[in-house]
Image (cartoon, rainbow, N blue to C red; front, side, top):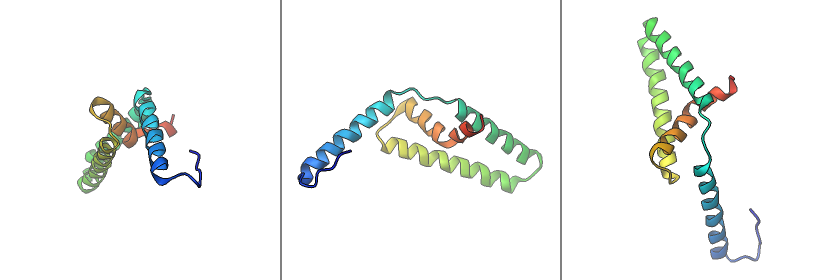
Length: 104
């Protein structure tokens, strides 16, 4: 992103919009690596099962609600970004559980 101080605002906005559209097209075309997200989801499910097994229903409700809220927020953000369908669900899944990449 290059900035020219003498560039009119309308030209700058058009250029930035074109750059955002180009980055969005590249992001939509790129395949998603969901391996780390699967690991993160598996660890989350295991933690929820352990909380349920131990009878910590309050903690179970809080953790599962937080994960659900985070996924809903990620899905809303992805849809607002202009993505839709299966790719939007995969991106929201990757945003929610992608922390599993740090484990493997």
